[in-house]
Length: 315
Image (cartoon, rainbow, N blue to C red; front, side):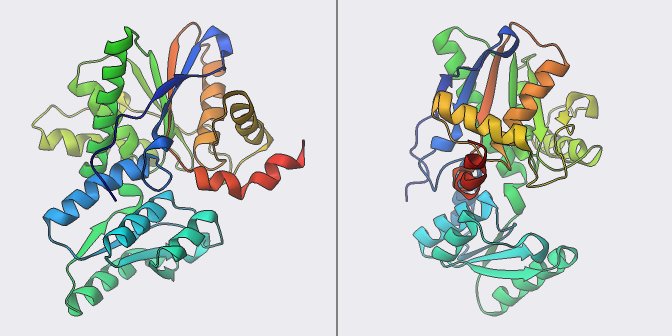
């Protein structure tokens, strides 16, 4: 599996024209690694670091719906190294991702969410005692390496703008563990841009959610010897989380249908479809008009198929 030599993901126009805005989408779901997505973009850099560290197994954390865990398990299997996943029992149920994690031969240890930290520490100690040199990746690819991956993505956006003489006024995306948004914000800061980076939360609420992103941004800026920023610089929108992670409503289902039918692009109800719906609600609420808007498709295509029956129920 080639983890390095992929091209910048394409940006294409969408049929959506809410409030006379022009909508575009960056197709990170087309990254050529395990259904793509932001987790694949991050995993590339984590596995480069794993190789530099000469580690011989990987440990990470996530739910049964986790795109992150599916990608990590896939790359580990391709490289022939053991992959251990710590999964909270509260969110462990069959999904397309969990079935693929099993296919890739990952070792899944389930425990109550309150015991996850202790279980991770225990698993790391157990592997070291067996002679392994384990490499730990935080859930969702959190950390400076994950942040760097979306600075790279931001620079791809700049290249597109230069090539097309276009400028995006807003960049929207789904935000969860925070490193995708942190990377985009850092990219904006490092290049001195003024555009709006809007993260639509799929689960976390403020102030915790925005603080998570802020901490990630400042962690990276500190390493680059740059001035730190304050919380006001983070647009972490928690108005559309509904009942939390994985929850969705009829409007989100309709959003997923519309984008698939009109533009041929699959989204899911947990991440991208929920964020796309939230973006539209935010645009209406804030009277945003006549702007160029970029939405980043951060992947999760397998989860689209988990809700295919629900998408057909009202047709």
